[in-house]
Length: 73
Image (cartoon, rainbow, N blue to C red; front, side, top):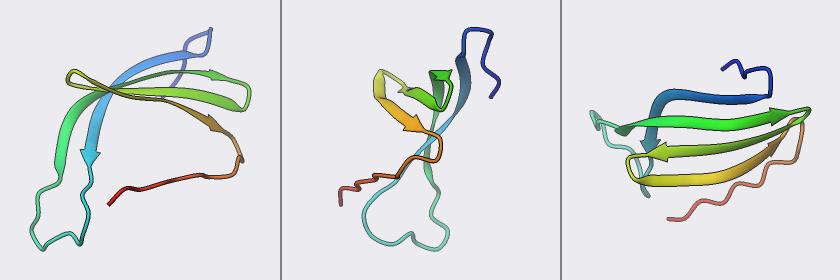
């Protein structure tokens, strides 16, 4: 992903939804078309994921920052 001169980006991609429990042999991932948009400034990145009518985020990421990931089961 290459941001424009202002640090913004808007690119197509795929979002894969996870679920609780193990992945079964031969299971097809629940993947949907998505758009990833955001702003990169210095060591900070703000990210939003648009999947259908849903918006995930915004998420703020920092280069070399501590990861804080919470998963619901």
